[in-house]
Length: 211
Image (cartoon, rainbow, N blue to C red; front, side, top):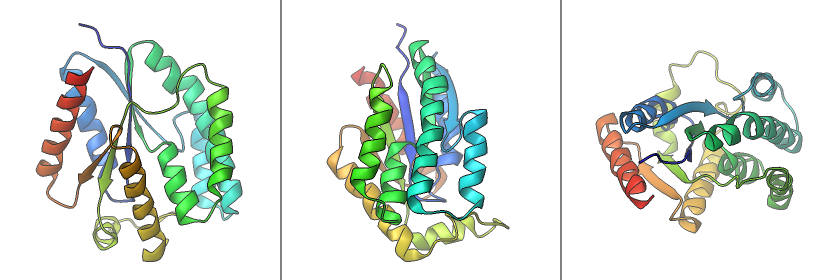
């Protein structure tokens, strides 16, 4: 049986384990005979990567930051995510719209109505749903985040934020999960990597069975 392409997003605060598990998740899906690509936001395209650099390295208003993220997202979804899904390719994306609500919305105070308006513009310009089929939310406390990113020599603008900021972001993510239990699966990634992989495997197995 050939399964149509699906859209899986990975979310969570910095250091939660998204990048570590992204490639491993792709290997799991490929072992099931599926075609898979890994991508990320902001980024995913040549233009998106340039916008990512601007966002991470330059101070700007939270609203300008949000608009730049959606500009990169428009290019990313139109040119990478949507065509891949239509060609029966599964897309694993490190961050998507949930991250904007958590980081720019709850973390930086950007109006949720403002974000919703940009989401609406993206949605109306695409001929398919922009909602992920499955979201894995990797959850860790702020103290553990600090331990995991302590080896990074140069932190970007986001990683330099304090505990108040990241606790707001984390709370927002958990609230998104509470409101979307069918799509968003919370993973306690504070434990060992093998434990996290075991949970991911169970979630993916259940997801595949449901298709």
